Length: 545
Image (cartoon, rainbow, N blue to C red):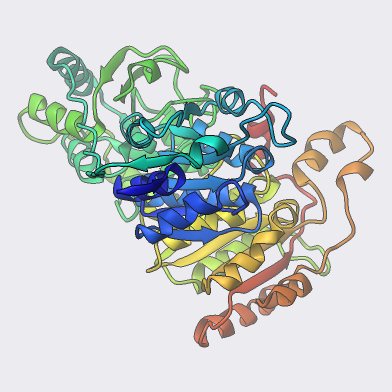
């Protein structure tokens, strides 16, 4: 092999198994990005680095494989920082490849390593031709084995150096799952034997372990719930409560609160999933299973902590239990209650009567009935976000991509693009507020250019609704967070979308028509929603802030 470091680094990333990259190409990352493509990787151009970062994050989450983000030096990186922060907080295996200015006098010169460290990413650097391939392997290895977001700085002067000699890029082995300690397994088994009303709450670390958790839950009579991040993990199970926490249905909250044992499986049991601890009864035993020792007990004290892979631990505990199944929390009364009122759409409500505006619950139930079940849903942040998170069903944990660790408004559309490319077999659905839709509007062109058959739903209340409902009741002026109504349908059509404006249930006929047609262009639903009342979860979001 002979060529420049830039060419070698691009080829090495592809050779290490990074088959997809997102980014915005400038002079500093032009050569390395082209080298990735020449080596067989797919490159997806975004219209803004912030969008590219979130697309890469979502793609890595949904595929479970490391993804690359490629950026220009300095301003390319700073533009992407919010998306990188979200990825780092979510422990997404992401390799951020950023060109780096060599001179402190350059207009592009910033302390890129300090920026990465400040937001929780791992900074690394290619320092010479001789060490370039090792640096790439270390970056990808850290992203995969450590589930970390890594910034690999590629200085401009090093990029131009010549690299000669043979090169081999063996795919990095998957990290070995952490086996649990036998004594810890027995302590958890003992807690399950003693429990009469156990509840399992699965989080991000439980991806891929549905079968093991469902089998163990059947043995000990546990009910099943998830954090918002893995919504859909237990879809279709008659003992599933759906999401625990701020998005929980009234029945789910009641049953979780009634548990005498709560086990978090790859789940932080943080303030969002446990409603600041109020979903856990004072006398309930709390257990937590996680393959990261630092995560166990990080958000609340636990009586039983097990360090281990979720699937391996669930199988080991099932073996330790022995004997047959016990009923636990699984009575006929509970089964009937879950079937009849376990979902939010089963809870009666009186639709808001606001002329020219549709109740967001009515809207989302109507969309849930119309859209194909095989879907992948991405939700932006804002007052509206509980509606698609609670009323739009997903088929499994791969049907939802929830980029909310940093709680930034404006990531939803880019999240949907990354998820759509990861799951081309499913209908991608982006649920956005009006604020987030305008923040991410540059990527509407990306949706059209990529030919994605996406449905973008804008819940337009002409405001930053969270602030309206948080500060309005105290009499604060709200001029700073209210806006004139925006014609999102016209904006979408300008980008090449089909668009419908929805002010009443009958207007959803336009969605049905698009679904029945060739779907040659993506669809934007400009939903003018009633917003006189805050969403039910908003008080939880602001509690403690």
